[in-house]
Image (cartoon, rainbow, N blue to C red):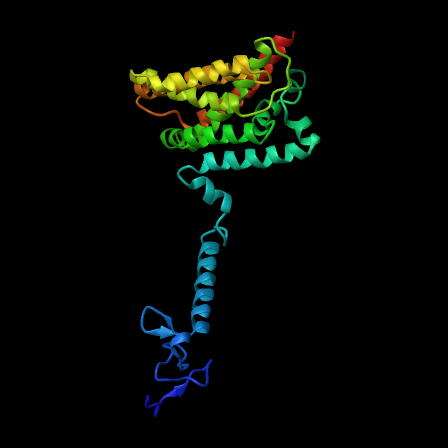
Length: 283
């Protein structure tokens, strides 16, 4: 039998005598109410007050530094090593799902040469739409497999620019190669990622045969299956190869990487050139 003389009842469980006190407020604590702290134990209320105080101090410090009290979640996501890739995947999934149920989204974002001249955003937004779950899943799986390594090697802004340029090139190639089809899907941009790998490997002197086989099989598959814009695959692949080859060539010969403003200018120029190219094809 335990001797409880000198013990106090737990502040939450009066039927439980204890000799242990909260290090902050002095409340008697039974074993169930003890929360380990840096020194000794504390009660749940003191732990909660400490967390609230730390949160308030952290917010005040960030405000004094001119920063938002709460970190921007999108910024946190993008700042991760594969953050841009994940952001593109997330945005594509959301827009594609909306497009499945809304003809308005489809009509506003899908690429068609006649409309793209006066609505140039279609050159990019068509890559956010897909024709079905399987189409979406395969493209996003390929983006997840190929994107993070390129994002890490080249940087976040360059990777975004590459993706935009290759999406534009894929869509522009469709009317250029004689098709008037409405185009949706990220396949052109995904083939562009393959092209970047091939361009980089060509510049460093060795192309992986397995990569060539994968690209070749997927390229040929598009020729024999109806409903696939193989023209976009070719356009994206060529653009990606030029980007990969050119970026490494520039870094070798200039002893520096392409600066961020130049990448932004490249992305804007790609859209402008795409519109002018379509206009020339239509005329």
